Length: 315
Image (cartoon, rainbow, N blue to C red; front, side):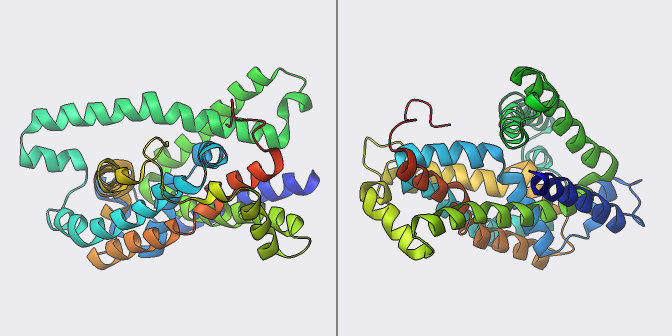
């Protein structure tokens, strides 16, 4: 347990100090400096920030729970994301940067009027605060509580532990954004994204190593042979993600999320130039192809271990 504490808090402190070092000479007195990172972000930083903005404990817990129950068809979310990112890099971002946009609602104001901008901005903020943020904070608190067991450590109930953890996560994240602007968020996201990818990959790697008695490929083969239907990539019409949806509603959703979602596309708006913005989107698309190893494969391995024991509450 000591190594868990040292690893978690050591890495967290490293991110804080590194981000502070990178921002030591920056000034945030202008809107461009604060909201667009002074137009200084490079492709890799944009990609790292986009990945961490997208991937959180709601994916690590929720999507793995869904793959445990529904199988590998959940991977469609990641594959279609990569396609949408390529389209956004080729078509959307050149137009947005040419227009000198700061936000997506600003685009709607130019296209329609200021009333549309205000309405959409309000709806986007409301949906983020009411639907997404509570899920991310709550799932993050569950994850941290399951690892560190703070309720037992401080002799409090699990409900109290979750409340305190939610507050700490929320306050810490707010401090990054409030005092450092987009650049602080982007750099800290990139480092945390590296940690998330490496740490996340260890989970299936260790599990498959144990299942395969020292050989991960044998472990993967064992998991596949145990339940080959879980690896059926073509979603049936009555499944949670029918195959036909990939070419209709799902792609529309992905094009919006990766090309017009303010929380995501703002990273590209902060790029040094168009080339770096496009690189960032393309790099993100490449990374998304590896993400299923973190948010899909562990769920499939879980079925090998637990069968349908947790079908009623997979998350």
